[in-house]
Structure formats: structure tokens, C-alpha cells
Length: 331
Image (tube, rainbow, N blue to C red):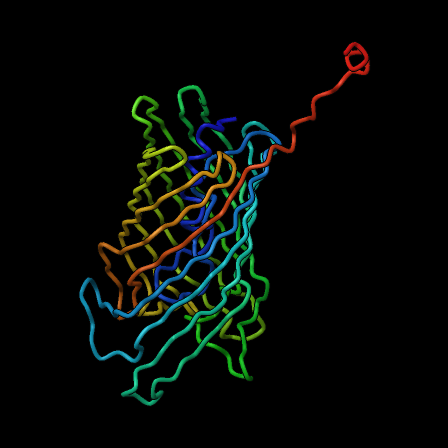
């Protein structure tokens, strides 16, 4: 069901997988990635997607202005993930994902006590489950309104230790805590001009950590994400997409007290190109550029990010055609 939308909607498969939308350079949690932007699947359809994302940061902000005299020269991460979606019914889709940080690295300046030192975290990020329900789905008119909800879970409740030292929060691969989310997705197509308009609105609520030490009782701020996409067929199997995305994050808290240098409001523009290999495999590349940044306190902020994904749908409910012996004998 609603398969005509699939090719175009795949173009955003890697933007962010349902997860932590932390815009800071190396914040804890998964870079948001894929199927939060894709509508429901047909019954017995399986979607498989793998993706890679690189993020680089080298500018501090305080409010909406550059800030000087900072300890870090830069920070970056490399993240890879695997996502699955399955159509349980004509209107209900189940999704799950896993991710792994190849690295989350901070590079200090030479003119401070750390003397150009690098610190790096790595490992599994949080996993996630989501359910989506098609409230209003009209494939012939290329219209879909879908709502969803889900949760994310940590693979460990305790922070990562390297050489007996606990890594700081900005380079931890996981939040070490649960979170819950709700989302609304809307899509409308304009076949006469081979264009689509689709939007997503998502809210993530993060719970405090439940680890064995006091330092694990940290609560990351909640996230509100709003995105608008315009897609256009530009050639056979090629689709161009332009996304505007706003991310708003509240303060983190620790022991019930506000963490000063946390929270932000950031606007991105994301040009994307998707290629459908004979209508089966879909390859997408994305480049994220911040247009506006406003940070509470002083924080290292993203400079750019790029990603690539590969995805495909499989119809597990399709039965092989029957060949009757009588027909074979007649030839």
C-alpha cells in the first residue's frame, strides 16, 4: 500500500534515525536517521536500510553569536546504523534500529593545559522501536497522514570507561537512559509536476539515567523537531529533495538542577539527491548546513554534516505463481 510514495520518501531514509537529535558536535545518543521520515509500509513489506553519517564542528556559539577563548579546536563523529521496518497490517508499521559510533572525538587546542590532546569515545548507541499508524491514506491521490510513537533504550546504563577513566558526556556513545517519542507525518503528491511535499513533527522526552553511580542520574533535554521537505523528479530514477529542519532542545538537568551550557535552537537546510537503482535499491546522499544557531550558554556547534544511505523494500507476502501440471502437459 502507498508504494508510489516509497521511492521519493526513501530519499530521506538516512537524515536522522529516530533517536537523539542532539545538534551539538559530539552529544550523546544516535544521530537521528531514517524511517521517522518515511510513511507506513504495505502489509508484509520489509524495509532494510543501512546508513553512515559524518559530523564536524569547530565553532563555539553563545546565544546566536560566535564565542572566543574556548578549549576545543574541533570535534567530529562517524556513525553507522542499520534500520528495519515491517508492515504488520495495511495501516500499522513496526520499526526498529541499531547504531554504532565508530568514533566521537574532541581535539583540544595547543594553548591550554591539554596541549592538543584528543579524547575519543566509541561503541553502540541507543536502540529504538517505533509503531506508526496510517490515519488517512489515499494512494491514488498520493496523500498520507500518519501518527507514531515509540521508545529508545540503552545497551548499558553505565557510562563508557577507557583505560579506567570515565569519558565526558559529549563523547559518550549512549545516553545510558530511556526515552519516549511521538510523531506526525504528512505527505501530499502533485503527479502532474512530479513533485511532493511532506512534513514531520516529532517530540522526544528523555528520562534520567538509572546507572549505578550518581553521575549516571543525568537527564538530557527534550527535543522538538519540525521539518518540511520538497521533492522533485529530475531524471529517470533521480530525485532531488530540499529540506528545512528546525531542532529545539531544552536544558539538560542533573540532580534536578539546570545544566547551564545546554539547550539550543537551530535551523538547517539540507539538499539531498536520491537514485533508485531500477526501482529497487535506493541510494541517497545528504548534506546538512546550519542556517541559524542560538545556544544557551557557550557550546561547540555543528559546522556541517553529510551522510549516505542504502535501502530497499522486500515484499514478503508475495506468493510465487502456481504452475498447473495439466497446463504443462498441454504444450
